[in-house]
Structures are given as structure tokens and as C-alpha cells.
Image (cartoon, rainbow, N blue to C red; front, top):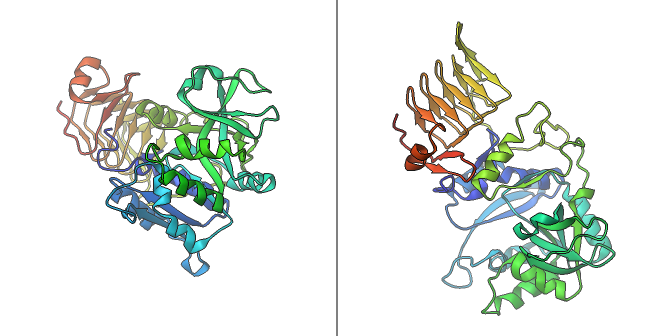
Length: 392
């Protein structure tokens, strides 16, 4: 909140022109996995509209990306967890009956070639393979932690945010953190979901219930994300993964995009991130009169943006943003159709769609005043929700 006030988190805009879900869908599409369903529940209109407008694959070839909202197929209740979402939609699995099922989260920023994970899964014969990213041992209490046998592949424990985690055999100062990406043998997944559905004490969560259940059977393996090689990646952005589960994480992931040598490189043409584009004109920078100069420095500027005698520094400007004369936007993320008035200054802010910053306003200068009007994160980033009215 407030970015999810009227949209599901995977539909939250990111990087100017994308939605969060575009990253996982692009990874699957680039890996030639083209039969995809997106299980949604609450506030799904924006997400469904984006998928239907953007992710239209060739039905003639049997390919699809289909949003599937909660249908209460097994009774008058919504999904009670990620495992229950799968259980309530087993008919979709029965329609296709593949040998393996990929289940990936829809709200992370990363590039990954899923074929390499599937290849390991098939070669090992595991019932489930869990993708993991190496993280410092000191951060173990922030993640679902995977513990392995001495060989480093078979999972022996899966614990949520442990205080007493043990380091990896080949790196005692690191742990395996679950990325929320799984590959299942189809029948093993179905059996586990059925068993879990009968347990009234279960939270019906993949990470919290299904994976620990399969770990006990001795047929769960870990996939080390550090071994994943994406075409076109560089040493700087290889292995990049961000869970944008908080506003501060969302903000920092944006800041990773805008340096001269970005930590996450959007310009990898060998593994593109796909999205839909509205028919907008090119960005425009106008005025060059004294201190009234339209400029953008160390910033991402989308189509349809007009920088009219204003200045953007270290910021992301989404389609339709307008910066009027003598305005300044610094270290900020502006979503679609935000207007910044004459002489207004915005610092360290996330501003959702259609917000108008009035002439002479100051955002990000007075923490207490900002908190009285808007959401402010722990690190001091001001967040203004969609369509909010901003007083000067």
C-alpha cells in the first residue's frame, strides 16, 4: 500500500513501461514455455487487462497466457494460500497433463533461463526442485531458508526465517534463500496438494506446507540460481534477483536501473523483457533559456514524456509524465501521467499514476509534514497513491 490500493501486486508498474509480472512472463517466454496460466484473486482487473492486451500468444500453435481468477470451484471460499490456489485449479493441469509443472512467483525482478532449472530437475528425478539464491548468513531471518545434505543438492530442511541457520558447506557465510520458484513432477504435485487439502491445520502454502512435506519424502532438490546463465548477461547483472515485497525494496530496485552501468540491465537484447506499449509519441525536452532548460540526467525516460524546462536526476519517468518549467525531480519514480508543476521539487518519492504536483510544491523535504499527508517508508521515501490530491 498505497500502490496496491486498487491493483494486485504483479500489476504494479515498474521501470517506466513494465508491470512486475512482465519479468517472470518474459523469462518463461524466452525459455519457450508458452502454455501459462496466471492465478489471480483480489483486485485483478488491472492485471487481467494487462495480460489480455499484452500477452497474446499464438492460439493456433497451442500457446497461451491466460489469467484465471478465483472461481470457488470446490466450495464458497477464495484461495486460502498458494497451494490452495493450485488445488482449486487442478482441472487446468488435467486438461494438459504435462510431465512437469513450473510454478513461479509473479512479483520479482530478475532474469532467469528456466530451461536450465528444468533440465536439472529432470536429470535428478526429483519430485520438486526449488530455485534458491545465495544470501549472507546474517540475513537468514528474512528468508525461507533451504538446508541441504553435504553434497549440496538434496534438501533436508526448509525453514521460514530461522534465527539459527547454518551456512552452506562450500560457503559457511552464506545460506540458500528460496526464490519462490518451483518445478514439480506433475503427479507428485497433485498427490501433495490433495494431501494438504485434507489437513485442517495447514495454511495451504507452497513454501510453508507443500515443500516441507515433499522434503520429508526425500525427493526435493535445490537449484542454485548462481549457476543460471542468461544469454547477453554481464558479470555485473548476472544473478540479480529482487523481491519487491516492500516499498523500500521497490524503490531500491528502481535505483538499480539508472546508473551508467546498471546493476540490472534492461538493455539486454538477447533476453528481452516484453511488455505492451501505448501509441505514444517520443519523449520531448524543450526550452534552453538560462536556468529554464529541459534535461534528464542518469534517468530512464519513457515515451510520451515532456520535460518542459524542468530537470530530472536519477529518476524514472513513466509514459505521459510532464515536468513544467523550473521543476526538479530527484531520486524518484514517477508513474504514468504524473504532472509536476512550475517550480515544484520532488525528492526521494514514488508517485503513482495521475497525480498532479501543484506549482511550487515541495515533496521529500519535511518528513513530519510528508507523513501527515502521505505514506513514508522506513528509509524516508515518500509514496503518493494513484489519483491522490496533493495540496501545495
